[in-house]
Length: 350
Image (cartoon, rainbow, N blue to C red; front, side, top):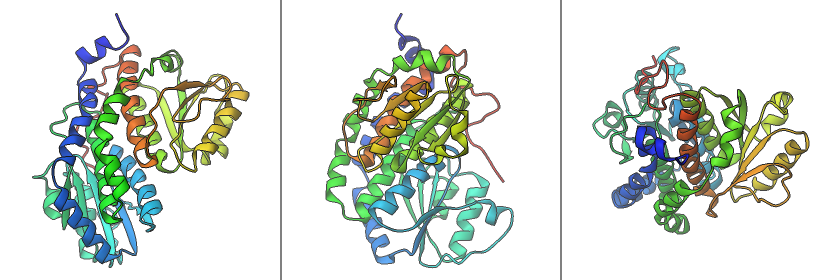
């Protein structure tokens, strides 16, 4: 029996992740005028800052949004601390700011409290949500639908990838980037190809691991965060995400023969640094997995296959391939990825 067959037949996580490209196709077939109109609104607003607000996987998408907006629209972007308003009750001056709330369900109380506080403080609120009838969408000035459909596995997969695509569409419309808009049209087909890439050579290393780091930088940092989270919640594997620059501080001391690293790269100015770190770690006898980097001269690192694409879309394809690996790894480690211990689909943080 192949490594993949039992996963595709037995877990919703696998089948939902496999269908992520269909969600992106549905997005691209709809809402073009609406998203272009939102882009025009943001251009007129000329926000002095962008604030993102999200939890869990959605917050990893917000990390991607930070780098995408700051590098393409050149506007300072920062993550809100929901407890500032929901717990501390602090009002902030958000006039001439864009507040982006990201959620699959649109029902988390602290997110809704943050949106209410942002509107009261003068911000324009944009929601990116998979539930068009949710309280979050109702409370927003503008909304972008994920169109991911029902997602029943606790581990969010297709909705996360649909969020990255929606953010890329938003920034392309905001900045009038025709090249990025054209590249997005090819994204669903690339996602289908990324899903078929064979990352099973990573299984022997990760099956026996107790801890490991997932390292990315810039646009790829949110992908690293998402992969680490999915390894925790579905595989019982303690994984932590760091910037490939930040890991060189205190976290570097833990790496060694019994503590592997998984490095992610994309086609931009961060790639050379990721490759240098992979070579350095391999020379220190750290077990290294690398995806999205040049395979040449990375020593003993195991290089996983990836597709060539624009840097903005690279994280989408890396996570798409990683989801297939993680769904397989979960079963190999004796877990059910659809039923993570102590978790529910909607997390209602106060």
